[in-house]
Length: 504
Image (cartoon, rainbow, N blue to C red; front, side, top):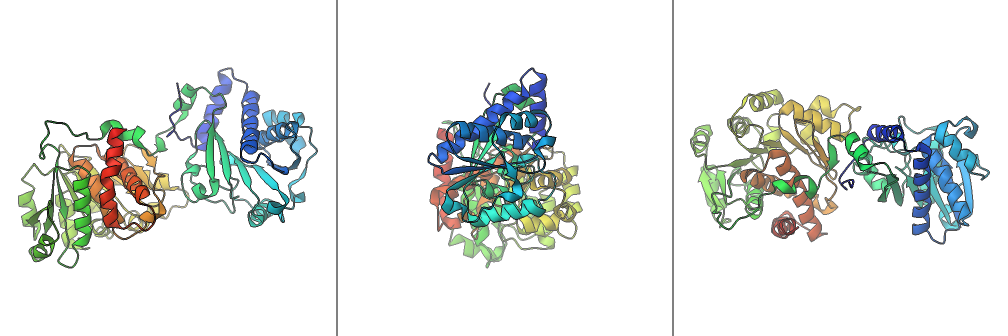
């Protein structure tokens, strides 16, 4: 049994896996030996001619890994300088044994002077704290971390760069910037969540011998977003299908001066495989839209009465409301009327409920139709704070916990957007997306994402899987285009991204 590459273990889950491995009869010190040897091998692989390895050992098991790595590097002929935090004579358990077996004379952490370390050929092995850090760095440790970063010494981190919260990815006072990070059995959330992801460098996952069944039993409902999670639910074209079988997506547009966002969403929906896409717009915007559209159809809807008449057509299978629509009572009325249908609520649709978000959540919770639960909210950080002010302001919660709490409250799938987008379902499932390139931070990019998700909903993909697949496709399309992409370019790249998925 192999451990799936998308598996994530929170620090407490990794600790439980270690505990269960020991209970199963495995030697916990043997696991530490495997970890330390893997660290030494990683250092030698990336720095085969290093002049000196500087090993920084902490007061726990992460430090124990460091003592093993220092011993193995010295046995390989590498000059090693060892520095420790705290009194090594007070170490307990496996860490004490690792220190005892390491015959290198160390010095207190404060004795290391990394000034000019890069020029002097030092490679720093960071075995201070790893993923289990519980409080901010301060004092001499914080000063040393800042000095190592300033000297630009190459750093290989054991488990996680010291100073990063393994659960949230946050910097705890200060954090080392690593070129390489080696972790064990599975990545931690802090390897994917920002700013931790940017400080880890290249992450290598090493199997140190904990059985995959134990890892699987300890893993929670959080994973990295990717095709392995949702590809089985991805709609696949079949020879006998016609356009109505592939779903009918309706995208709502704003007035004559605000049609661009809706057009981007509609075009993205068509590219993502919806059989038909219609833009619904007020009468004064129809002529503007008609000059810009070909395969996308048009429908005049001026007010709530017009919408309610259209909703009688059950061939409409999903809706996107918000991009360029305008903030206010009309948006609120439309969203509430759509609350029982498969719906992507984005942008202005979200912000329109900033004064009374509970009315939206109540509407979502009351619906019990066939499409109940097929709602997706796609807030960026500012929109999230408008809808979930108390959750957004809770510093004890990381991004994953915030998204989960919001999904539970709203009874909807939450796509908490950003460079480390989190997708969360009301039942507690959550995914961290890590394939988004920085070039996606451009006007209209979010409108394209709403259209992609809407099209997948229209094709009857379950909401959580549709949101996750949409976010991943959006990132993959952006990665194919690279620097200088625009939202219009992004629409054109959806086809190749989708084709790659279907072929794979």
